[in-house]
Length: 215
Image 1 (cartoon, rainbow, N blue to C red):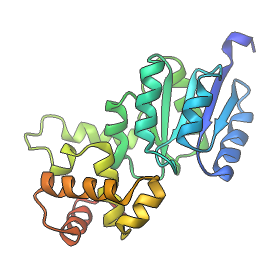
Image 2 (image 1 turned 120 degrees about the vertical axis):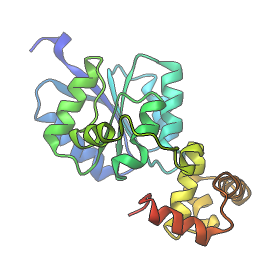
Image 3 (image 1 turned 90 degrees about the vertical axis):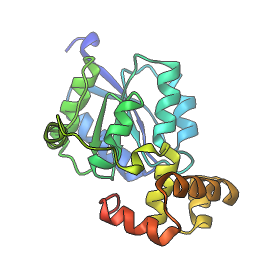
Image 4 (image 1 turned 90 degrees about the horizontal axis):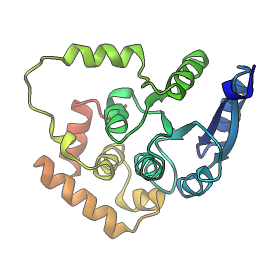
C-alpha cells in the first residue's frame, strides 16, 4: 500500500463511543486512517483546517450547532473537501438538504460497516454517495408532478426546530441543546409556523407525524 493510496479521514461526532467505533471500523481497512477528530461543531471547524484529510465524517446533530451549518462553513473554506454526513435520522429527512448544501454523501448510523467504508472510498475518489434505498426513493419520484411540501421551504435551522418541537421538546430545552437564546428559538418557531400556515405547536406536531418527519 503506497502513501498516496491512503485515505485520511477526520471525524466530527459528539459521542465518544461513536468516534471509537468508527475508528475501529476504519482501522481494519488498511487504506483508511483517522487524521483527527472533534466532538462539537466549533472544534470541527477549527481542527479540520489543521488536519491533512480527504474526507470528513460529520454528524448532523452536534451539540453546539447544526451539522449542515458546519458543512456549509467547511465547503466555503475548502470547496473540494469531501464531507460525508452521518445521522441518526432517516435519509429522507436530511439527505437532500445535506446534498444541496454540498455534502458528498449521506449515511445513517445504522448503516453496515462495509457501507461506510464503501462510501468513504467513493467520496474520496470525487464521487457522490447515497445508499441504494435512497437512490430508489429518489427514482420513484422522478417525473412526478407535485408541489413541494411546506417543510421544504424551511431553512435548515427552522426545519431542525420543527422536528425538535414535534418530538416534544420545549423552546427552553431546544435553546439549551442548540446553545441558542430562548428568544432566537421562539423566532424560529414563529417563522416556521407562518411559512407552513400552522397555528400552534400541536398542529406542527400533527403535521410532522403525518409527513413522517419524526420517528
